[in-house]
Image 1 (cartoon, rainbow, N blue to C red):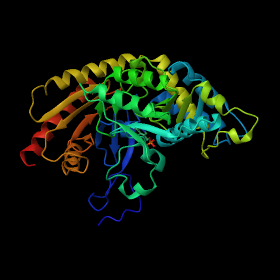
Image 2 (cartoon, rainbow, N blue to C red; image 1 turned 90 degrees about the vertical axis):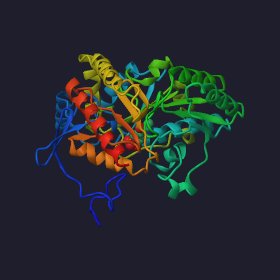
Image 3 (cartoon, protein in one colour; image 1 turned 120 degrees about the vertical axis):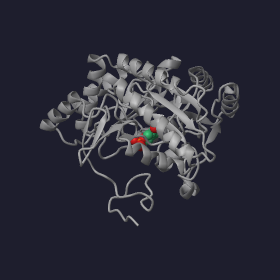
Length: 421
Ligand SMILES: *Cc1c(COP(=O)(O)O)cnc(C)c1O
């Protein structure tokens, strides 16, 4: 039994060998201590956008450390946080005018929920229900687990999770059911907010839905005075083909959560953007209407400087072109699986491509997941299927040849696993 001193996330230490160490990272690669280079096919859990250790971001961090460490953010402000807020407001969907900083995707969603509930509380409006989409994932804190899909991951905590209302995932051809379910819930007058992953449900299995549904949900929310919270923690920073996924539905949410790619993946930081209406609902000479939320490391200046450098990269480099290129490469590679009975539901959204391996027992705990992972690692690829859902979400610097080899590995590994299920 491997009683590791370091307790790793989402890891069953009784079933895993001791972890290999990574000595360094470089572009699309993780470099193991023995010098072995592993292609990071999932951007180190979806955080690395341009590539590992983009020089401009690393330099910004070095420079920031000459002046800053953590600074209390309730008494003072600082330039990196202000420049970043300005940049985010300039680049995000219109109408988002205020930026609240935190440290992770989960906390950015917690902040969003508190903003929404605090807003109605301060206005004396009794709305207190949250609507979510089935198969959603919004984080691993108690609050965000409450809004996510229930299952083996949160069974132990179930008694503490708060109740939410759920609308079905908009399967192709059944989109209207989702819209009707949401409209019915909204008619109760009790719905404070809809929290939604725009276009792609990540941890739920890379489930992709149409931008038209997103636009329609936004319209229904607005009509019923329900706040629309876009959890762009995974979809932001180009993942779905545009800087934010909301752009493809031509919508502006009331609240937008961003984290993973915010610093290009270099250091942890999160931001929750909101409209002036939400900010103003907390603006009062009555101190009880204050937004009572903080983390110790709110707006860490070094992390903010890294994010400012990331924004500068989006300004200086042809990032969208690189993303479009990666999108086309995925499409070409996926063509070889058309009509391939080993895979089902071959799908793509921007830089994300996913296919379901056709195995008897699916689901996250299917034994096939760890087996696939091991076979990919042996071939030099970090690819972590979600159960039988195999997906690639590489950093944007990945080359055509590297991506093609990743697809070769998927094909080879699929045949091995299916030959001996
Ligand atoms: C990863 C993720 C989160 C949680 O982010 P953490 O930084 O892991 O807390 C929240 N929402 C979505 C959509 C995510 O993909």
